[in-house]
Image (cartoon, rainbow, N blue to C red):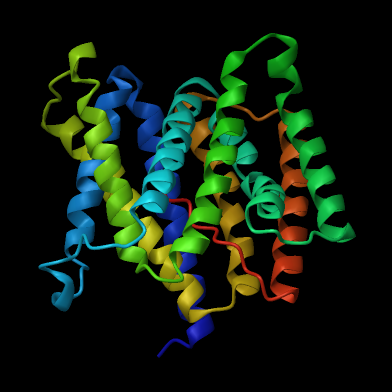
Length: 293
């Protein structure tokens, strides 16, 4: 029988694996229109969440008194999701994953303005270190005017607001409803891209595209379960296994070799994120770290 901490580690590891596989399939899917990939992410994620709705909420699962905040969470989440999908299709996998670790940095800044939180010296130093890491990673892109480097940064900005919104929503709303609404928003938004041309996938591609939604759905659930069973400070470091998976997938599938600058920048961003998490925990203000993409 596994202890609670061991269960937390297991769920976090499975979550990281699921997110990494989802990113891998999204990068592979560049022959399909982006809107079509969004549909598979939203619809099959939506189907998944209907299986975990509590029985007593089946008839009124959609009920909420905070529709406006749900809308903003979905809007910024959609912006983040589209941005990370574009980045995955056009940049090395390790580069995208490295920059995506910077989301807690922006969440710290947003919390000052949206939650009126006080940020001390340690977290400000962590923010500065994180920004230096981002500059180190993206400098080659900006020097050659590669616009795609801006998308993972947009992802971090969008995800940071999402973290704040989820923190506010979770005081009154169940996590499954927050996630279900987001999957529904993705599905509805994808329908507007049909006129731009969708491609009918063969059976193998249909299965792979469906896995984007399935892995995205279960990854978020496993992440929530991990935080339920174990302390955030114990399981959060496992998130950075995603960089190792990205390096391995990128090398063996696309022959991508991360540069020294990418690895150095990633190290700075990871150090920054760890400092922020540990400081948040010591102050008993744990920010949401669920990806929700």
